[in-house]
Image (tube, rainbow, N blue to C red; front, side, top):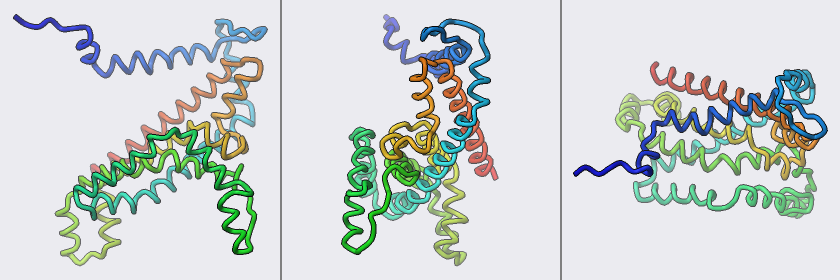
Length: 281
């Protein structure tokens, strides 16, 4: 007698497309509809009012926040990728299998702690009377304004994304064909040339995806711009909260959120296309 399929089994056997529809397409459709609603007397009313788009897209503060968010996210993604590569290279290609497992475990440990706690802890280091300025004072330097600066925001972005970028790069570099590296050495290619002409092209897809994940995390982050950047410069995540607090303008906040989603989707498609086009070549 055959076992009848249970609801539990059917639920987890549903195609990925159904899950995408339920948890992405439908919420996105609601967000699109919300962007055309109207706020009257602090009440959100269903409507077909395109004025919210005009109000947001014609505001200079929106485009300033958009440019700042994009620039900081791209910079954080680039710095995270550059800093992660030597660490991932050493873990993937220099350590033994047992040591590699321990290194990966250590990279996972930061995720055991709340990101908010980790970002807030940086205030102890970056404040005018913090640990870094205290150490600089012994050498007769400082104090320097480290907190509430774009640099502090980037520190928070690295706290958020760097462990993940290292993990993704490790997984990508682990599967690089060792015979290609040996062939490059046999052809008398130096170490740097082997890295840039053999290893990086072979792991290109994974490296680009790791940078993309870093960009996505940084682009939507709210904690670092607020707790480490002091709210200045204004990012899109801060602009969303300010908009909702200003007369309960949830429809206008939905416009900002949709612009963020559109930017991330365009960036993701462009990055994946670039990665796999390079892989085919």
